[in-house]
Image (cartoon, rainbow, N blue to C red; front, top):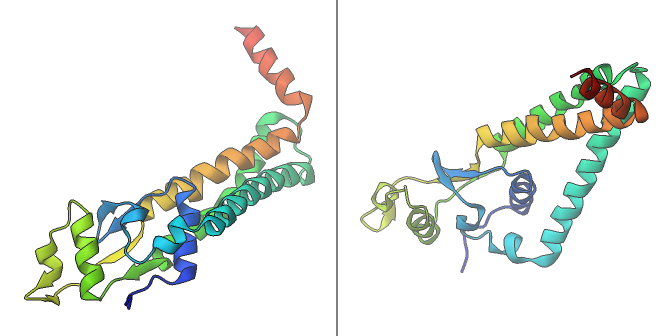
Length: 184
């Protein structure tokens, strides 16, 4: 009987963050999402994976649309100005990514799940967590804060926000790029 289940909203958050390339940790040691005990339903359930993929695609479209909308609203005159205003989509994603990394964690306390987790992550010493048949230290599994901030909070919104802003410039982007190439 499973007694140490990962909350569905935490499992959904982990799956969503993993689509951005975010890694995971157990007490500071690198781990994979598949090493989280009692998270199997979220990983192998096809509708869950489909929902995560759709949510990721919607996020990409939303960030592109936000970059486009901001560039149009501010009347960006050239591609450089458009790219600068496209960066304004980054701060909300940065805050979300940092909060998600801190909030979407799970601390295991059941002897069986602690044993599974400590045994599946190579850098963990099971004896650190289990002593004389009981849990001595409860491991915490979650997204890598550094990865979440870097990938989901900075890289992803920068690329797609700027792309959306550049789309607002239409042929101006292509013309500016050709002009720069011809200058050389």
